[in-house]
Image (cartoon, rainbow, N blue to C red; front, top):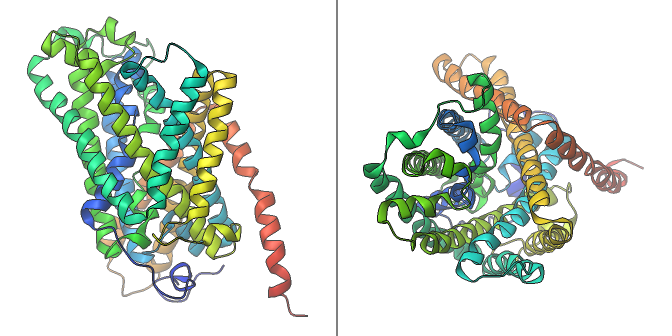
Length: 459
């Protein structure tokens, strides 16, 4: 697809549907969607995961937070140009043509349903604290499947229900975590922080290594842009919701991690399976913290699954309307949710859960997380490249203000560099497996385009 001649690109994804879709997400719901998808189950395990690197991981948190805000600014600008559902698919498609849009949609869709399976598996560990499962793989699998299908059922009820669930779940998980992060700061002991760099490697190397583990926790900054077609006044709301949701999530991450690092001795934190529970125990001197945090974690991950299932259905919905995904993905139910996309996500996630409990949960979970890191960064990279393309096109016009052009170009260039760094930081194994998942979609594209070609070619 060639670039339109006007400054603003065409918006076929919205107009091709005939009548405009009803927009049901306001600023509060869109912000909750962003925060709910960023803050999932990862925050409850991250301090222990990065503790072996030392407090240098706090520097990695800060770097990732700044980069995530840059991506939020990028998506806000792109949403002004194309305020439609499926943003991360629409941007590369409008700039570089249907194949780039398909690759972005396929990669993001793969990231979504693989991530959903990983999150559902993560619920099991916290449920085990509340209701001991005694290592029974069958019960663990059933809990994971239930954790996946309950949010899927909420999606079938419609986007308005999804937005309400996101607000409630975000409040339930944000308030307790923020209380721990703020109240816990008054009980911090500096001796607990341990060494700054516990790896023996260089500081940049330690930052990169710890950041590679933290990438998964920041996926979701694009949530409002992907669902822009459901957002009220998307030209303004998407950018504001993306920035507010990202800043709120980064605040919870940084304060929570600092509090846990200062409450739990470093040697204990490295071995901890529930770092926030240990932090609460350090404050209260009791042992009730583990149960309370486990309950919050279950609510947090369930709310995160609720939002990710919606996103996993929205991206192929937009691509299917352009003929770049199978046609059933473009059908919507009474609530405005692409039902086939929800079904596909839930079924594929269930299949991965079954694989997880036959191949072993620990190994498969790590593989799933690494694949989501790579496949999630590909659409970021392509979206930043699309913005750079449009800015280069605009730069040749005299009516464009140089100051605004320079600002937007800086944001897009830094976002591109950040996405490239994330892909490199994912590691060789993740890049290798992620590329295989990405290339697996090429036959689907060939088949879909081949079916369209006879209708587009004159007899």
